[in-house]
Length: 159
Image (cartoon, rainbow, N blue to C red; front, side, top):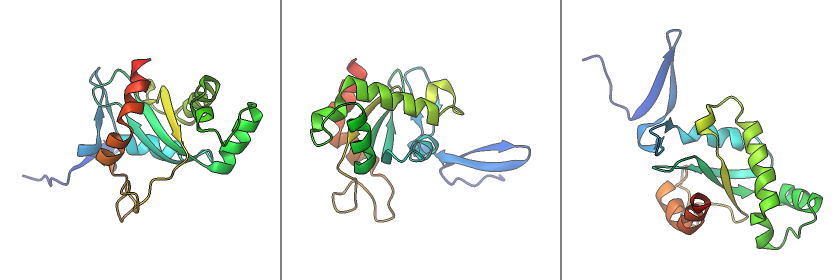
């Protein structure tokens, strides 16, 4: 019938087709907003602080993010805030979260307000094929990441 089911979500602007994301990856928030996580994750990784990001928010009131920080950039940020970069508790300090969310807002200025992450959980351990959090083609294994960070994600939404 003129359609090809690829599993991609696309938009047509001025006669040009743009792939927005995979339908199975689209996040639908509690308010019904549809958010393609790939675009936001790519925008966040433009900041040297973030090595890897995963946007979450399925059936939640807002979008949030789990991010792997670049160790050198993290050391600079922590030192500037008077925190110990080697203490994992520093990653979750309220002042750090506030500063990082502000960076995220600046990086996502072109996105709809509902698509901008409002909470963040930072980690230093990278996601790799070896720890089964990435596929061999270096795509996020979202179900495994969601399971690994389930408690942390719940905490972001509990506040």
